[in-house]
Image (cartoon, rainbow, N blue to C red; front, side, top):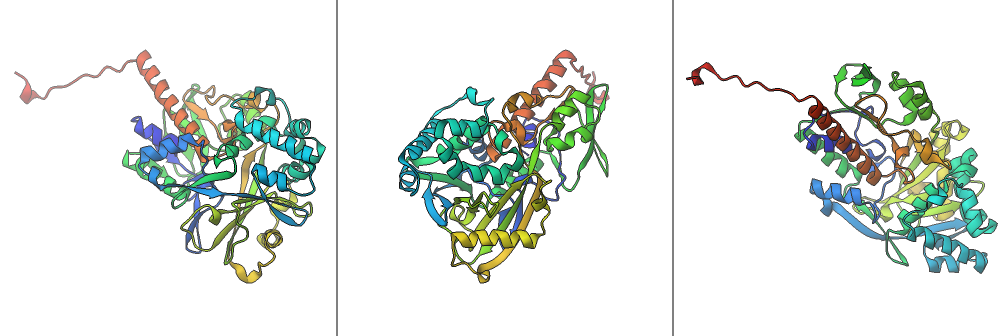
Length: 438
């Protein structure tokens, strides 16, 4: 949508072809017992500059609100405050040297703007070298294992570093984290983008999966759905890379192999609407070996204007993992057991509504050296650009990165179009009506 918005603004005729029945992708909403809620949680950080610029252009920057938030850490049967130096020093059962080493890594990660040496290192090796085995075991091991499973030991240090940096830079001061939300949720941004695209002459087609990107003589000619063929001089694909090889059959085989080599894990978000608060924190990291849940996100501790308590329990895993095929009830039972660990006063009577959202390609696996594995955005087929969330690397998935890359791709279209016109100028002949001739 960001690409379409920019392309419309640049004067192009635009069709948005969306497979889902609603716009927004991972930022799409659903009605949750009277509240419009994202299927997958989102928040805004102080460094999300592309989001700020877009909100300003759309005239809705006043709908972005900042809230003091906090983190928690559940380990060894207790919930602790987390995410600031005092909380780190107060954590029981951890040696002072381990706390200092952990704090030093966090401090340096937030302060550094670049860290190229991390590109070819694994996050596990990086953390072990800086912090030691005790810190890795206590604070990182469960998080990695319950998100990446068999990929745990082979996650890029550069990718983890940028996650630490983004959250670490979203603070009012050293002791106070501050995150943002858009009034009405991501739907406010999605709906405003759709209105701007359509008012500029763009067309949005929902529930229309693209079957094939068509080409002729190594130039893109459009995209075909089950119902019709959309003719186009330029195509921007933001489809997950696992679909690309089949969707663009005319790509060279070596390019198809590069897309196929990018692995993804799936995500399941179990969402509860509850009568009572679970914790006072927005995010709680969970380190409980017998429950494979890396954390809990309590959206209602960030986003105001929603009724009751909204809690996300996210599961990340390869879709080959047997848990990805669990029935909803089994996931709901396990997730609620986790919430009861955090707040033993919770009972089944506190549940107002539940929702299970699933996505097969929710998170790219960014291995050491991942930057060299990402294909260029511009493909060998003229007029065809391809990118998905793995192209944000080393940044993580997020609205800001989607906006930045989407608008950049659309601007590239304008540059390419102008270049074609410069090489092949169009001659326009003006015919004068007979009644105006002397």
